[in-house]
Length: 630
Image (cartoon, rainbow, N blue to C red):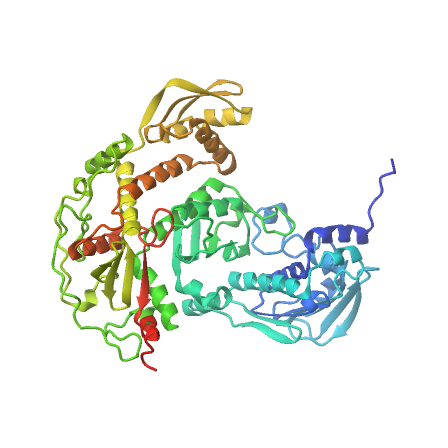
C-alpha cells in the first residue's frame, strides 16, 4: 500500500470544489451570499453562456482591505467566525471560508475591492493552474467585484457534466430568485449575454414586498395567497401560503428560509404537508414563501458544504409550531379570501380594489347589479341541510346527535337521514343593507340537482352541493370527536409484533403518548411488542400496519399523526356517505342555509378529497362571453 502523503493545496482545493462548485449557479450563490454578508444594498450579476464563460458579481458592500486580498482566496480563511462559540451561533450566510478558494481552483478568478478607508482599490488575480495570487492597483468604488471566467477550464471531466446553456442559466436564475426572496432590503440585477433578465429595487414596504413576490413567483400566487405572521416560544413564522385551490403539479413553488437562509428540510416539508393534508387534491403540491426566525444558537447550519440543510436543536417544537400555524391559517380561510383571488385574476387588478365596489359595477362595462339582493326570507326545515344565519351565530350540532349519527354508520345501519341531525329551524333572512351581503351571495336556482347557483356582487357563484355539504359534515364530525376524546377498545387476543430493538425501545419510552392515541402497547421482549388496545373507531383497520407506521413516524419525526390521519380518513368517508346526494332537489331556503354554513365552516373551499366546492364566474367573464362592452 502506498505511503500516506499530504495533498497539495491545489488538489485539496479541487476536492473541496467538488462539494461546493457543482455548476455555475453554485458559484453565483456563493458570491451573492458573500455580497449580502458584506452589507450590500445592491447586487449586480452578469453571466455569459449560462455562466460557463463569465460570471461577474458586483456589490456596494463594505469591501475587502488590500492586505487581506491574498488571504481571502485561501482555504479556511474568513472574517465571519473566529471561535467555536461563533460557529454554534452563525448569523451570516457564509462562514466556512472555502468558497473563493474552491472557485479559484477551477476557474480564472479576479477580485477587485475597495473599503471606505482606502483611497484606491486593489485587484487580485489567480488561475487554477498555479494558484499564485497577483495583486495590482485598480479603479473601483467602495464595494467588491468578482469575475469568474472559463469555469472548469482545467477539469474537463467536470465540464462534460454541465447541461445546455439554457438549462444552466435557468439554475442561475432560480438561484437569484431565492436570494431576492430572502433579502427584500437589497436590490438585484441579473443580465445574461448583455440582456437584462431581472431588475429588482429594494422592497421596504409591504406593498413593495408583495410586488417582488408577484414578479418572482407570479401574480397569481400573490392573488391566491394568505399572509402568515405568528410568534411563539422564541419562534416567528411569517410569509405567504397559497390557498389549496392554487396547488401545483410539482413542488416548484416552495421557498422556506431560516434566518434568511434558503433551506430544504424533511422536517419542514412534513409539517407543511401535514397542514395541507385534507385540503389538497391527489398528488398536488402546496405553494408557499415562508420565513422562520429562530435564535441562531438553536439551529446548526454546519451540516453540509452547500449549507442547504440545517439541524434544529428542538426539531419537534419547530415542527409543531410550523404545522399549527399553517393549519390554523388554512382553517381560517373563508370564501372572502377565495373571492379576492378569483376577482383579481379576472379583472387584472389588485385584489382589494377588485372586490371592494359596493356600487355594484366592478367591471366598468355598464352592466350594473341590482341595488337590493334577491328577496329571500325563509328557514331550513327538518328535511333540509343544517342551517345557519348570516346575521347571527351558527347553530351548533350537538355532540350527542353527532355521535349518534356516527354510530348508525359504524354499526352498519346505513346512512342516517339528515332529519336526525338537522332538526333546528333557523332564519336565513338577508340584510336590507347590500353592504352586508354574505360572500357567497344568495341562491337563485339549482342546476341538474347537482349545483347551486348563487348571485353575488362579484358575479355568479356555482356550488357543488354534495362536496360542500361533505366538508361541513366532516368538520362537525371532527369537532364532535375531539370533544369526546379517542376511546380505546381492548383486543380479545393481543397482537404480537416482531420489531427491531430500536422500535421496541421507542414504543416503551413513548408509552403515554401512544396511550393518548388510543394504542396500548407493551414491550414483552427485546424485539417483541404486544398490542393490547386500539382506537375503537379503527377496529376494522390493519392494526399491525398502523402500529408499524406510527413507530416509523416516531423514529423519523419524533411524533406521529398516523392515528389521527386514519381516523379523519374514516370520518371523511362517513361524511361523504352522509351528505346530500346528486339529484336531491333543495328549496331556496335550504340552498341559502347551505351557503351560510359554508361561510362559517373551516376549509369549506375544498371537500374532504381536496376538490373545490365552489367557483366564481365574474361579471367580467360573463360579459366576454356575450361580447358586451365591445
